[in-house]
Image (cartoon, rainbow, N blue to C red; front, top):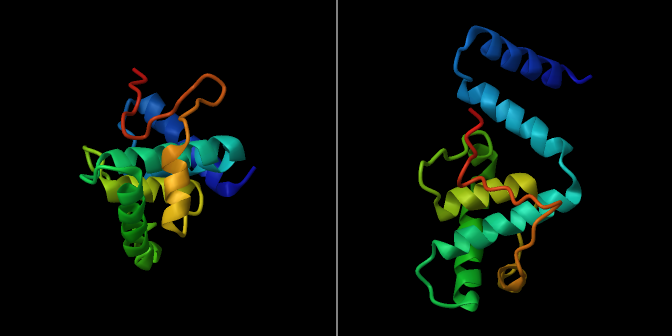
Length: 141
């Protein structure tokens, strides 16, 4: 078993045993491990869902304008990705940049407005009957 996985499980178990809150670093490590073992199909579907959620936050009024705005925002974000990747935004309310960052963690972002537009025009579908939402985390208590 990989060292990072063993350490993350040990940390989560320690938090559970002592009723201590999970630190942001431990939470992020657990999330990265879960994402890394998720199926390719789920990751692609979730990436596209996050891109569509980002588009819904834009003021533009059609898919073409949304696609062009998303391309501009993703290019701006990717210029500093080597920094952003380690310091992801943790906004209470979803933002276009935050959702694109989450989408980028799941897979490469589109490189043209046409690719973004195709994603925006796709029907949202669920994988295995479950649609995951990063913008609205579930309460596991």
